[in-house]
Image (cartoon, rainbow, N blue to C red):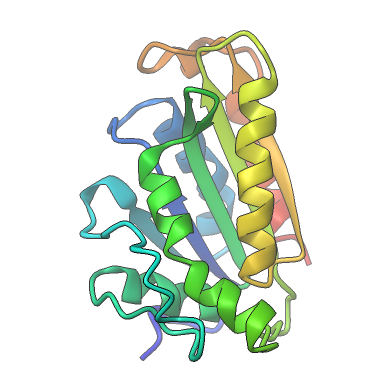
Length: 198
């Protein structure tokens, strides 16, 4: 059963911050605004509130591409398979993606096995498959963005999203501080509009 309702472009968004109303949340909301305005079908997963166990490296998915753990990742698998666009929004913690995002990505090992071991890529639909990564953190150095982007690139490719764009902001730490950034919200809005442009 599909998690989507309509016949417009299907967009999955993952919020990886534990902080409700934080900088990642605000940026993701702004990126989604033009997508909602255009009437596309959006499913938002707030990962911090979901029951998702970490990958156990049991190798049970190698022969089938199906994870043996039964939890709320099953909704995410269905959404990923059906989606045309994916947005991942994460704070940078210790130069990496948040634990919430990384747990979800690690559980996509099943989809990695399906693609690379079983040679069954998820087919592209009418609109193709594109991703977007939103990163924000308090650090002053770009290495956190580079590390987070590298992980996201492996994720997007493993779930048959051949391309993604990254929107990143550093030196932004306190809750809501992104609202004081001179261009961030407009950049997020414009990136969201570009993501669903045909």
